[in-house]
Image (cartoon, rainbow, N blue to C red; front, side, top):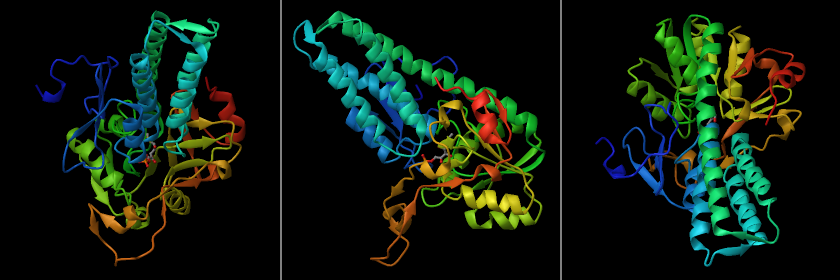
Length: 376
Ligand code: MRU
C-alpha cells in the first residue's frame, strides 16, 4: 500500500479526488500533507480535533483559499463528532448544542483572515446546523444529533466535490482564452491549494495536455509556494516547467517570453479588486506595462460581494521569521527587522478577465460580477 498509515481506514472523499493528495479524511480524522516540508519530505500530519486543524491552517501545513475552506468544513464535522462523544446521556439542552456550533464556527473562521473561502465554507456548515436545530425545542436526543452529524458530513463532502467540479470547468474556460506561448504563474494554485486539480494551475495542466505552452513559475518568496509546491506538483505530473526568481519576472516579460499571466485569488471584491499572494500586484503592473494579458482564476466561493472594493479586504501579516529564515537557516543578520505581508490587492482595472466556473467575467467588473456570481 502506498500510504501505510491508512491501513484499515475507510476514506471519505469524492469520486473524482485528485491523484495529488493534499489530505486524507477517514473515520479517525484528517491526515494533512505537511506543505511546510515539501518538496524535501512528504509527511502527513494527523489531526483529530478542531485545535489541531485550526493550528494546521494557521501554520500553513494546509494552505490555499479553497483548500482551507474545505478543510474547515471537515474540521467542523470532526469537532462535532468529538462533541457528540463527549456528551453523557441520551438527551441534551438545545442551547448547549447551539453554543458548541457557535464556538466551532468562530474558532475556524479566525484561523486565517484573507481567504474568504474559509468563512464561506464555515457559514454553510453553521447554517445547516442551525436550520436542523430549528426543528427542536429546548431538548434534543443523541439519535437526532447523530442525524445532524450525517448531514454535516454530507455537506463537507459536497463542498469538496463541488470545488473539484468548479476547477475542471475553470480549466475548460481558461483553455479557451489563454494565448499560446509562455505562461507565468505565481504562488501555488494546484491540487495542494484546492479540493483537487487546481484553479490557475488547473488551467495550466489543461493547456499542457495540448502542449501549447511553456510554463514559468515564480518562486514566491518567502514561503516559496512556487518553488516548493507548484514545482513539486508539476514534477509529480511529469509536466516540464522553468522556475524563476520573483524579481526576474519583468526581465522575461520584456524579452517576449511571457504571453500570459495566470494567478489564483483569496478574495475578490465586487469591483474585481483581487487579494492574492504578495507579489501578484507587482506582476499585474508589469503585465500592464508590457501589454501582456493578466488573468485571475477562482471559483465563485472566492467572491465577496459584500465588499465594494479591495480596500476592505483584511490582509494577513505573518511572522517576520518567515522572511528572515529559509528552511530554518538564518538568511539575515541577527536582530534584523522584517515585515511579512502575506497578500496584496490587484486593482480590477489591471485584470484582463476573471475565469470562474460560472463563466469568464470581463470588465467592467462592477456591472459584470454580480450578473454571473450568485453566492449561495
Ligand atoms: O498563503 P497561501 O499559500 O495560502 O496563499 C495562497 C494564494 O495566494 C493562492 O494564490 C490562492 O489562495 C488561490 S489557491 C487556488
